[in-house]
Amino acid sequence: MSATIRVVRLPHAADLPLPAYATDGAAAMDLLAAVRDPVTILPGDRALIPTGLLVALPPGHEWQIRPRSGLALKHGIVLANSPGTIDEDYRGEVGVIVLNAGQQAFTVERGMRIAQAVLAPVTRAVFEEAESLDETARGVGGFGSTGTGHFV
Image (cartoon, rainbow, N blue to C red):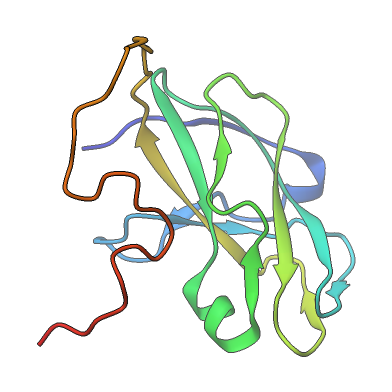
């Protein structure tokens, strides 16, 4: 199944490829850093990295912006608002909020695969106010309420 994303490449990304799937079975496409000069992010700091892209998503869809697992494992590079959401009606430049959760400075260079994006359908909720909710086995148990036991 495929859907069309209309894209405008801004001048600072004119020489960079459009987002692409790395393999035939990939769920996410790679987003590239459209920085003019390298951006060094110190441990604990964050930076907004431009992609140089404006997009028009198909109606009823969002673009979920996610970290790349290799950058997270090897360098501690994550996205501050993961997953980020690009709404179907947003027309500004897509930017990626990169957070260095690692222990060493990390430099983002031009054309680096900095994040990945998944095109996903959106279901809009309608709220219905009620006097009470049905009972469940979990009930009001919150964070950690199901334990950390091992299953073998």
